[in-house]
Length: 365
Image (cartoon, rainbow, N blue to C red; front, side, top):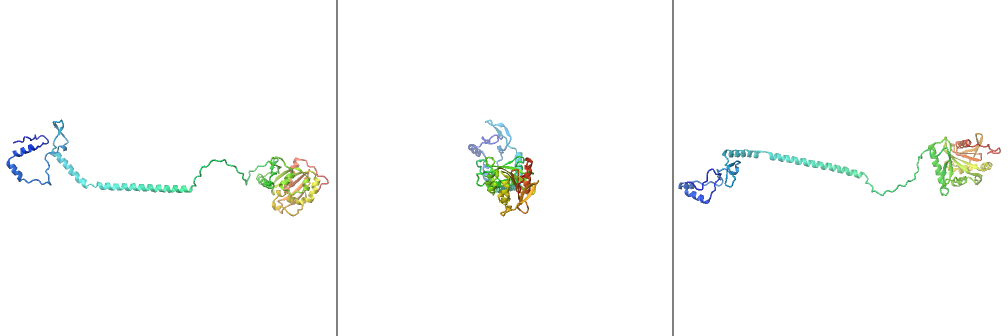
């Protein structure tokens, strides 16, 4: 007797109800019931697999559709099931025996070591660079803070090597002094030293003329200059000297720069007679134009000499004859030189510019 609830074998699955199961048990023969009691129950450890194929493992839908309109799944053939089982069984041993996780761990450790070594190398380079920069900063002085710019005030500094060609060789130069200065004598000595240094570089062949002036470039008299320079000339000599005078500087080829004076005189005969008794004092009187080493505190003796038949007087102040006092009275002028060649050079310059008169017959030293 067929079960009313038995489905068509073509359907992929059956729907069981309690009513249908009870009716099926009643309709089965008695021996089937007895046999079922004699048959041992399956152990729970080995559950029986359903012989019906799983509709969810099928890849090919059936051509038939259910009442809802969805395609029903066709049962998978036994060959396909075996194929799937075979593929899984073949893959499982490979997955168990494959050493891929160990190689992956080794490669991971290598990557970690490389990254760590790279980081340490970068830190080492950065530390060395920082140390180098810090040491350089310590050696370099810190920058001074910016301060408001103030105009620089030029300061006067003595040039030990002044530029040559400072003085004119064709016209007189100014020798300016400040008569009101309490240290005018020192300033005169300093200016004479500057002239000596600069003319040594300029090396002129002829005497260089200077006009002594005050701070307003007004020429001063010889009396004013004698007082300012503290020349030790007596009043007897100063009284017969006129106010006009010139200062000379000559580059003596034998001794170097030497100075001389040309002073106008009022009466040559009176000056001549006065000098005969006071010429031994000229060494101290002309001290600003001489070296301190040759200034004698003892009386000195003058001797006679001539230059182009012109009478003159002289005395050597040292054994080397690098300093001397030579003087002559010509054409109402008193010519003085601190070396033999200085007096002769001054005489030659004046002789070319003026016509000297012969000394008076009664004039003699």
